[in-house]
Length: 164
Image (cartoon, rainbow, N blue to C red; front, side, top):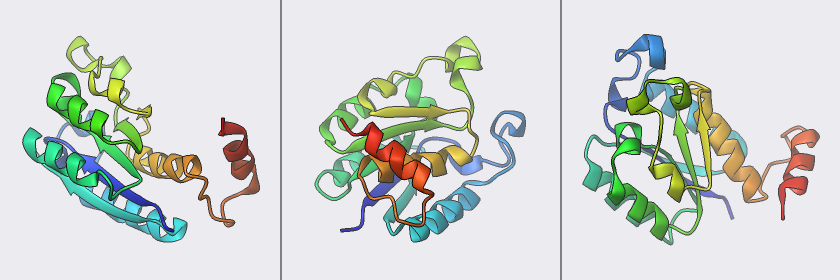
């Protein structure tokens, strides 16, 4: 059965490519979504891709993944640093949860340095730019043991070594 991955994007990410390009680059969220869909097609997985500026809507999306998705990839954006509601919703979801950030939050100013939502996630990816979304998708498929044969054998070896 093909893996189902929900990709969530928090506030202001709809302005990627325009907002602070010196931090986030010039790639738009639509371009990221297109890249994710292309990789999903190659990996044989399905994705649903969402963005919301509203905390409650993100909570509802996380809740809707319960029993319907194998993994959530979330870029909580500004809610990373403030949202107990997202933490609680993520704790309900029993599948793989990968938090990602386009920038390296650990190298940012004090306000943007410590994500509280990462405490409810399986893994965290930060600082890879838009490629972080693709790395997160590959990580999900690897963790589910569903890497296709077209992926280099060395990665399959890592997948087998990573199973505990």
